[in-house]
Amino acid sequence: MGLEFEVKDYLTGAEIPDIGAEANRQAVARYLVETKGYRATAIIRDAPLEIEVDGEPYRSRIDLLVMAGQPQQAFMAVKCAAGSLGSREREIVSAGRIHGEHQVPLAVVSDGRNAIILDTVSGLRIAEGMDAIPDAREAERQMAERVTVPYPPERLEREKRVFRTYDQANINVARS
Image 1 (cartoon, one colour):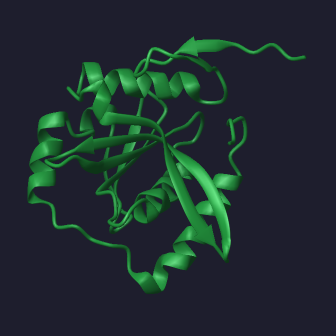
Image 2 (cartoon, rainbow, N blue to C red):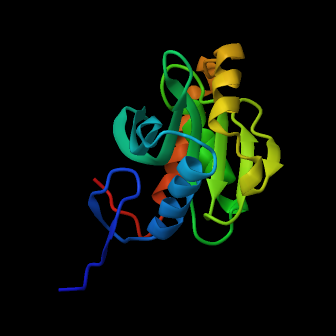
């Protein structure tokens, strides 16, 4: 048997396995709460992402899903990664596009020290750096002005395949 190390999850206080980029996720969660002013209860850890691809169910998770607005809706999908952030951009944009009925406005990839912020609808980088992540007040403002945008149905199947391809390439993750 291998050794399993656990850490205390910043958001829930639960003991969780220290697998893959968990330290990065804990750093991002702490930053979102302590620096950006989000309530811990507005951040969903391992948000379920269940889709059907080519007639087969596929289940995954979004590392952190930040909720904002009244009523609360997904505002920002976050991929916490070790290593090259740029190589994770397409994966988190796809996740933000196919999660739920409407696209999540922002997609972020971060290692806990740096971040790339992307517009989910266009897929374009809009900012870099942890400071560029919108704070809770800005998230509320953006959600109040938001026009919801569903992902175009004619492109949905392709986007699901893109997400699955990137997601399956992830290593050192706990799979359900």
